[in-house]
Image (cartoon, rainbow, N blue to C red):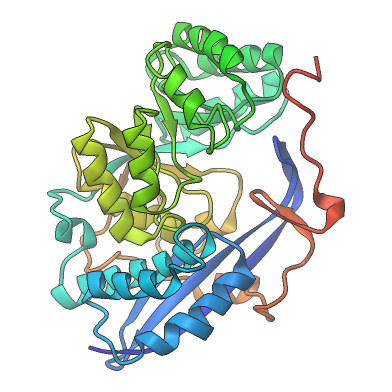
Length: 394
C-alpha cells in the first residue's frame, strides 16, 4: 500500500438564523476533509478545523508531493516528516492542524490494513465511550432549560452550555439548566474565555453549589498564570485545551499545573498521534482528558477512538447546534444512547462519508471563502462583532 494522491474538500454551510455567542452572531460553519488515496484503491479519511484556504495550500502544495509513494501505515514516520517540513512556520495553528488531518487518514488506513479498528490498535478493549451534548448557546433562560431537557431526551447524560455573558445571566442560566436536567445528569459550563481571576473564583464557588462537572476556558488560552492561580481554589475541575496545538503545547499546560482536564482535538492539535501523546502525558501528571470537537463527525469519531482506549479518557464532545457536518456527513450517523457513543468494530475509523452531503456543501473554489462568521473564524469586517465586555450588559 502506497500513497497515490491527497484530496482536500472544503465544506461550507449557512444557517438560516444562526446563533449568538461570545464572538457575536454565527452565520455558518466550515470544515475541511482530507482524503488519502492509495495505489490499491483504499481511501483514508481525515478532517481539519482551521482556515480552509490555508489547509488546501499546505496539504496540496507542500505536503502531498512529499508523501506520494510512501507507506501510509508508517504513521509515526509520516507525522515526523510533516512536522519537520512545516516546523519553520508551523508548530501551532493551521500547519499543525493540517498535518493532523493527514495523520487521522493514515490511522484509518493503518486500521484497514490490519483489519482492526483504531481503538484496538491504540490498546483499547472496547469501542464505547461517554459523550456529551454541546449546545446551549446564549439564549433566554427559559429556552435554555427547554433545550437542555430535550438533549437529555435524545439520550445524552451530559450537556454543556456557554456562559461569559453577564454575572446575573450566567448564574440564572446555570440554575435553570440544572433544574431542567435534574441532579442525575452532568452539567458542563464553558466560560468562553471571558472572566478575570477574581470573577472566575467567585463564580466557581457558585458553580460548585450546582455540582458542575467542569468549568471550561474561563480565561484566554495564553493566560496560564490565571489558570494556575484558580486551580485548586474552587471545588470544580478546571478544563481547557481546544486552543492548544501539539504535545509540546500541552506539556506546558501540564508543567504549569493549570488544569484538571485537558481537551485536545484530533482535527486541531495534530491528529490522532498527538491526541494519543497528550493522553499519555496527562496520565503521567495525574490529569484526565476529554476531547474537544466543534467541526464535523470525522473529528468526533477520531477523538472517540482515543478516548475509548484510555481509562482516564472521560468523554467526547458532540455538537448539537444543527451542524450538517456532524448530523449528516456519515452514511451511518453518530448516535448516542444512555450517554454513550458506540464505535464500529470495522477496520480503521469504521466510517463512510455521505457523498450527497459532500457535494451539497462542497466549496467549488478551494481558495475562496464567502464572508461570514463561522463560529471560530470570521471573514469580512461586517461580521466581526464580538459581544461587549463581560458584565457590561447588566
